[in-house]
Length: 221
Image (cartoon, rainbow, N blue to C red; front, side, top):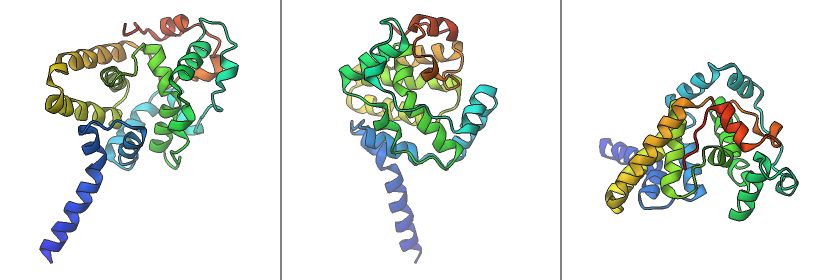
């Protein structure tokens, strides 16, 4: 019986680790990241992250209201001034074939943690643009490092640890570049005001440079 229970426990542990093992093997698809994220919702770590965010009044309001902006209409945003956040965001999303909905619509919102993940997913590419971190694997990890001084985001910690291990095992020559991106993201995140607290979609027309100045962000590049 003990052997059977141990076997069951090992099987459950392996199932929970599958998204992380997939990342180590180089699979960074949205589905894999989504599985990893959802596996963290019920953890004490995500409770801690939620409590940290709720200590800020603006973030607490968003969490309390479960604030989600309407779907981002890229064709409309392309009519904004060329220096505006809305135009630059729409242009990048169109060029890359992305839609914010592909990230957040699959996340059921039933708790503070799941709401936080849904809102972060809706605005993830806005964070890329405001910080100027690109979408290469290393720059993606730099953006995840940006999260951590802002709040202890469990998915960011998971992605950082997985990327360090996978780079060590499969692409060791990139370790200095990866560490530099992590340090840069951490430093930027410490100096910047809260990005989670922003209602970006209510000021699409604001110039990107103004957003950066107001949030105390020195772009990555």
